[in-house]
Amino acid sequence: MIQQVDDFRSESAELRQLLNGLMDSDWTRATQFKAWTIDDIVRHLHMGDTMALASASDPAAFTTLMADIQAERKKGLSRIDETRQRLNGLGGRALLQRWHETAERLCDALAEKPADTRLKWAGPDMGVRMFTTARQMETWSHAQAIYDLLGVERPPASPRLRNIAEIGVRTFGWAYRNRGLPVPAVMPSVRLDTPFGETWEWKASDSDTVEGDAIAFCQVVTQTRNVADTSLLVCGDTSRHWMSIVQCFAGPPETPPPPGTRHRSPR
Picture (spheres, rainbow, N blue to C red):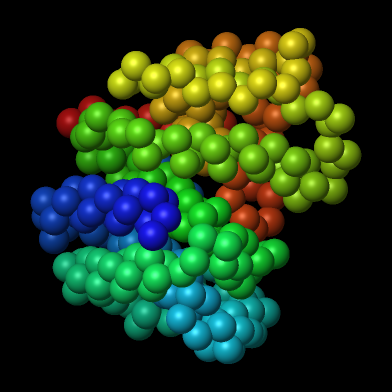
């Protein structure tokens, strides 16, 4: 079994612990992420895990599910409205239980896959390591909006954060191609310091660099913070442009949040 499966399972468990402590009224509160409620965020994660489970266990079912979702979207439904409709308004603790059960089944299915397995997704097929990391990244990034809304400080970062930093670096070219822009010939070097004493480095350019806190870098590449709201040191034209369009997740181009709009609320 690949390490990323344990990391994804732990990421889901950490979010579940936070959600277990919610009041019933919390589930319908709007977050700073597109005014999605906590219900909306967990529905989105649940549908992502449901799609991933289909891909990992029954590729034909995945293809059918994707076609059905796309047909509904063509009717003019937004992504979140389509999910609300598909889940018949499932919310609160019943949603929490359904999401948790699906995430566990997904982890079990991924744990059985050989490391060289490739899985279908909405975009290009992905190797099982990157596929699993993408689910961890989605869970980690969307959880941030819930922590922010509740004014709760996240638990200390663990070494599994490396997976999210890795996907942030590896999608450098994707951020440009997704916008129809030419990919710079050389990507910036990235050097990150962690709260647990490790330093992570991806060496490429000597003139363009992104350096600083690993958590801040992960927040920026997942668009949960604007780079201006972090202490990251960004040097060089390519680095500055990358940080202005950075996007490590699939889907149409998304604009990072404006400065000051994503932050931890006072309790």
